[in-house]
Length: 183
Figure 1 (cartoon, rainbow, N blue to C red):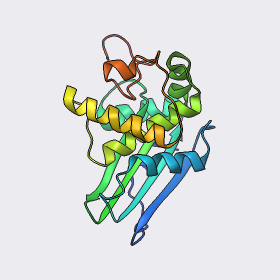
Figure 2 (cartoon, rainbow, N blue to C red):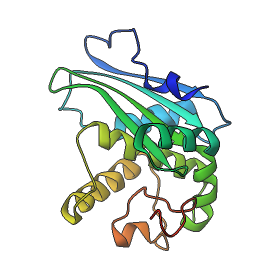
Figure 3 (cartoon, one colour):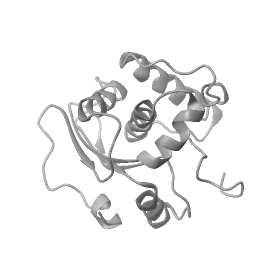
Figure 4 (cartoon, one colour):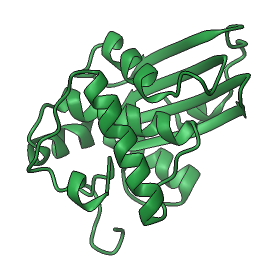
């Protein structure tokens, strides 16, 4: 897939109510489509939108690097990108989430859990961004971290106590592919 395919808005209208999650896997994904859909649902506040249409793309690091450079001017692959296409609470939310399966595999071992769990964390993190969370201030990062933890708990996924992201407030932010200058 080219980078342009991820930024183009879907021609389909979201449903009148409910959640529609479309998944495109360019790279083999360790998490099932069912779990990815459940992760989006767990992270999306049920009372915030009447209808939501979210696409999730699973890509490799070279594709993620290209997308990160093209859309954010960051010259490295990253863990997750999210793009809100339409955010009109309480009516509708439309957005795209792109996760790197290569970065997930690289970070999962350090995190002390499976690559599938790492992918699901990225999906949750991206969904929270679409729903209006940010992680730019310590307070906002703490709120996002709590929301990530709650969504993971809803999925029955235990966070590894040895994973520093849960104590430093970094959340899904993974630095496996960045140089010191990029962090």
